Image (cartoon, rainbow, N blue to C red; front, side, top):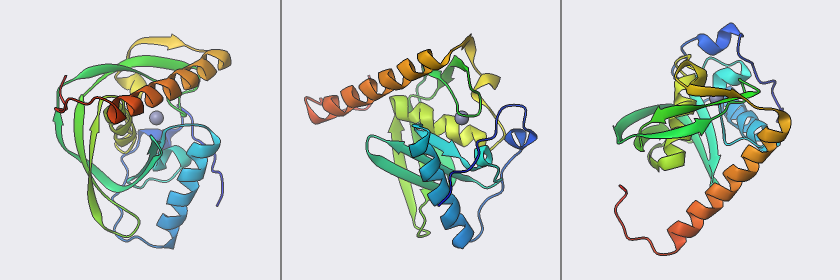
Length: 183
Ligand SMILES: [Zn+2]
């Protein structure tokens, strides 16, 4: 496995549309492994292949101890909306609010070529939609309002807040959960 260099805003590759994966071969498996290592080492929740220089429709997200390896992911249903404050490995030093669907149903293939469905809501829906946008050359700053500059310390605080939010979400799910995905 190798930690790959993350492409930054201004790099033309981030504006390109990625190609569908036609065959899951050794280089796709390697790509998935490298992407997983990249998000773990950089303490991120997700990365899309173009961010490490590969124009392939591949996304890896790790959220609530769950690793989602997505090949040719597609949003097949979405509902509701909410605003989330987003940041991106490719856009260091900035964050901004982006309106995303509250629920998103995503169809993707795993590394074994099996199709599966992810029902993402809330924060996870924002993460998935943000990563899938990368596959079409769209960055969050293309859609964001209230874009703000953040320094390293603020970035670390963001990560702590994110972890806390994920933890709270987990507890809420384990505890009293009155059913119904819409609030
Ligand atoms: Zn991003």
